[in-house]
Amino acid sequence: MAEAVSVAAESFAGGRARGARSVLGQVVLPGEELLLPEQEDAEGPGGAGERPLSLNAGARSRVRVICGPGLRRCGDRLLVTKCGRLRHKEPGGGGGGGGVYWVDSQQKRYVPVKGDHVIGIVTAKSGDIFKVDVGGSEPASLSYLSFEGATKRNRPNVQVGDLIYGQFVVANKDMEPEMVCIDSCGRANGMGVIGQDGLLFKVTLGLIRKLLAPDCEIIQEVGKLYPLEIVFGMNGRIWVKAKTIQQTLILANILEACEHMTSDQRKQIFSRLAES
Amino acid sequence: LISEKWSELFMQRGLDSETKKQLEEEEKKIISEEHWYLDLPELKEKESFIIEEQSFLLCEDLLYGRMSFRGFNPEVEKLMLHMNAKHKAEEVEDETVELDVSDEEMARRYETFVGTIGKKFARKRDHANYEEDENGDIQPIKAKKMFLKPQD
Image (cartoon, rainbow over all chains, first blue to last red; front, side):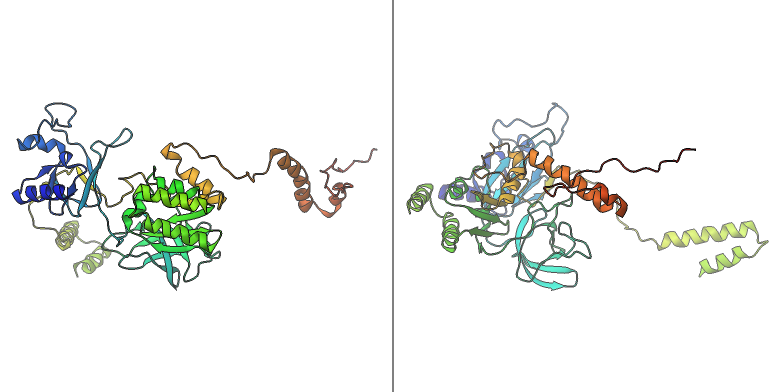
């Protein structure tokens, strides 16, 4: 890790922008500029043996690239705004070449993003909207009509202090975030008020993404312990529920602690739990 | 304002068509001057091939946020299968017994259901058609009593 940081510091000090492809998986620092693959050839000796992505030789057809969280567009280059490892994903399916670049960073403070599913706590009920605390800079607003089957006569049963699982429809730095508990077809799809009991606790955002990865071992092992239910909010909140309070607390402790455990330590703990 | 005078003038008959046209042009000129515009040279719009997205949903294929294990919440488990189907992962075998109604049961209920609802909408005279069986099941409607025209 120290080597990666020193390399990054050197190139940054030199002021030479590096190619995005050559930095994949390495630590990048805010302020660095990254070149997209087609530009590396034009830059000269920087890119060694990189072939341009254009399909037909001669015409400079540019490939569309998406810059994800942690990156900004800076002219023709990508500007890093968060420190972390640079990741890349090739585009799946037919359309859209170039793929996605993003920085895999870690933070505790959530910033509302459109489309994210989050757990919120209802803090106020004013007129036709609920104010929901999502952990951002201001509470999100949730209209009472944004629930499945809600009409003006048939209001949803939501009280102050309830937990809500919903997604953002408006979330930018200029406006108050708005969330709904309904998808574009009008179906709830699991969103809405989260049931009684259970425990809500907060973790880092990176852990949520790690636990929600398709091949996450932690979740698979947890699921074998005893019957339980978990809801993950992208704002760093997790709600768990099991049959007894003790089981719920054990589950909460495991999920909080697994961020800093190696997989061996985790397996030890799970085997000890399975015995008891 | 010119617009008021313009409408007044148009109301008056016998006014010169030339004067009318002049007034119309003046009116248009005033309107177009009132529209604001930027006094800048035309910017060359550089077609950018980089799109900014702040969401992690595009980057990483994340699973659906609600999960239930070992039958704790059957609805959530159904949702999990439905929402995660795009990941093409092997579907986990349900350990719990399915609570769906079987086809035979459905057919049996529907048979008597038709009678019950029909009885609700039938008039009082037709209630006799819906005789109750020994078991209490409603039999479906028999032949309707039509008007028989008397002969001769």
